[in-house]
Length: 82
Image 1 (tube, rainbow, N blue to C red):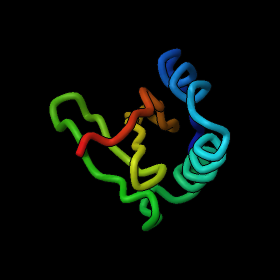
Image 2: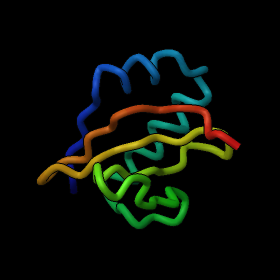
Image 3: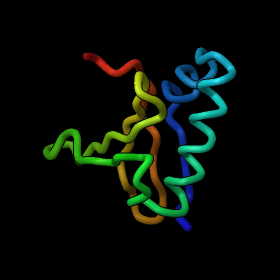
């Protein structure tokens, strides 16, 4: 199982989410730490140059992260631009 760490921005973003989205985010973070390829995450490379990945919280929200040794570093959580 991989560790999770959160940037200051990710913590602020998380704290600004409604409770139902915080609960959904918690579930997705748990899945990420156990199984990067879990289908509900829909994890994919977002920025090749910066090695940033994107994964799904809900239909409308995504989180962005990097992989650093034995940890996923959550960078930000934001509404998915459509």
